[in-house]
Image 1 (cartoon, rainbow, N blue to C red):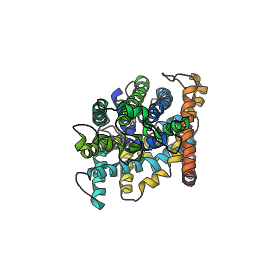
Image 2 (cartoon, one colour; image 1 turned 90 degrees about the vertical axis):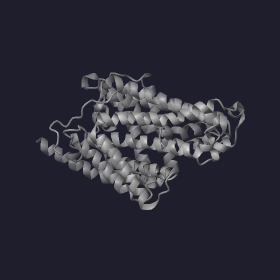
Image 3 (cartoon, rainbow, N blue to C red; image 1 turned 180 degrees about the vertical axis):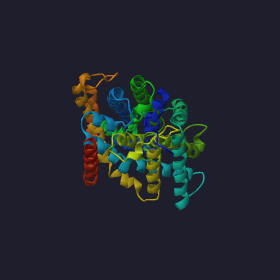
Length: 449
């Protein structure tokens, strides 16, 4: 394989790919457990539905912000690019550094293992065999996204449509079997007094992770056709699709199960499916299939978009140069994809990956928070200095402020929940990243002389 002389990626993905990436990344395995967590926090069926609706509406401002940033800088790299253009190369570097070493490969390995764990419902596997099958899934999707960004985009669109269909089936059947009295009167006491404003706020906060990932397509803006139109439209459509899906699911769940059943269940979607006529007796099988399709979509999405941040950094000489290589035939950032998947495969054989990923939650949240602040810096630069977004998020400063407040609330919660881990991960990021950044920075300055 030889490096392409022009290490640029072509624009081959349309609007459907933008939506598929966002929905495919967001609608993951989290909804299978978060339903009970939100039910426990909200304390009533009515507040459970409201929590998901309001939580989804509050995530839309973040997509508005990303829409404006993506239309201003339609190139691969996502958050890295926004930090760089806002004038903070160190933050831009740390964004990619943490993504590569702490969040992206671990997320791939965890999802691959999750697929195999759900497959065990049909074919009991364990130990080394389980891990080897997980590796096979990573290699399979790596090959798909190595060979063609167009093929990868089509596959992502198909698998995202397939992952929505089972949810649509559950919602469609459930709507005709709702007990309205459960929606109106079933309440319970939770950590907060049921029916209070505090309970509603707690429920809304608990939905946040279910909506995370809607801006995935921003990392591939440089490969989207007509990005100044398709990126904003795709991001907004993503938010609408996910909101409608989650609102419909929680409405049906709240009309068929008591709040106590939802809050206490470790598998609320399976419990809901068991209550549905005709398919109820096959609930375990149906939910296992749903989970496999859902996680496959998320795994494919991550392998597709995540390597683009290292590709963008390498082009700016802030990461290993090989990561900027573009395959001469397939026109994909093959080296970046291969290495990220290789690291993920190594981590599949590690232990307690979920715990490892949890240590870096705070850094990921801070990265999101700082990204929302960049819009103020970039707007101040104005068109004279290169900030020319084709889409302006509505409401002036209102949308960025809402996005900042929502993310800040999560940061406060993370500090309260795991203060030691949060501070430790920030320290690790600085200690490991600073020397590397200054090494590359000095090297670049020396080359310019």
